[in-house]
Length: 423
Image (cartoon, rainbow, N blue to C red; front, side, top):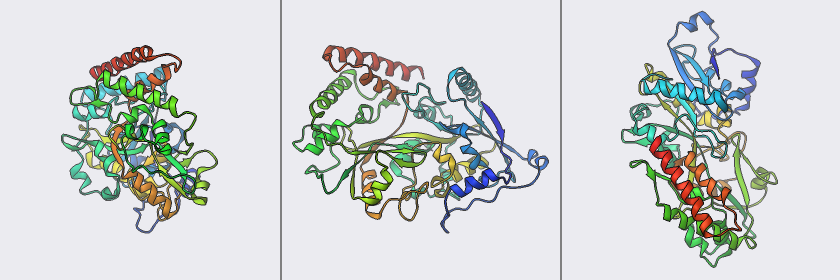
């Protein structure tokens, strides 16, 4: 763990980081230059505590953001704490902060990862939906209506909706991810109208449709995994077993005939994939596809979010941090977004007009990508439930039969149920 008082000093490092953000459009919100006044004056300002728990927060990526938050070093002073990435130190820090929050204390601002399944670590808030129900976060609707930097109507609505609770917008989803598959337009076409339910694709006579069904991730095929009103899985154990059996059987069936697409990942805010995906995007014509859930849409996973402690003594200053962080200017190139390793929520980014982290699509490709986003019907926080679902396919031996699968599904279903009850 490390604590830092970010005093906005002009240095070579910050200069390099600022340049790396790319040139600004005239209509972008432009951050103030870091305040160069002395330590004594700054230490007398109101202190705003910000907890940062991002996968690469310790790499210096946040140093290129907080000095530029409007008002920092002039009206208030940001104090950050970053959490250890793993091990006993992380566990101790999580326990301490959770205890503080339950006691009505804790940081003013939370900037958190949901933590990817497979890494084996949990986020500060195991289930953000439950944290919203438990009234940990400050309602933001009134603040959003007066925001200075964000463009709420340009943030992907289905993703932002996931941050709403009974009292309105409680969390701001910052980044998300989903499967993006590229297929050469001159070589592949499909007769199936998309979006379509997973079973429809799996049973189709169309080879491309069957292939898309074969690439689905089970925890995204199932859609939302929990009923947070009841704190139980969103489906029965028998329902999970039946779908897992169908997915595994289909995967075996299409293994030899599947059309192989280019998979696109989003690392450090950039497109990445085999054969230098960016060059492929700009050099050839691709159609954008994804995998589809059982209800006939695309599931996306929110990887990072931000919120304000309901008990913060400085809510206005706290919202300034969130307002600025989710602005187009910050999302398109500030290093803190690279630390999230996912897609930004601003819908204009990656277009020719608004490159993100130096990358842009052709107009035709961006239209195809935008149509794909229009097919999203489930946006959920990435949690340990996804990790439990991954465990089913990780444990199952494809050479074994139905009874072995049923045992594994039962084990993981009970695990998911206990996670929700205990949280």
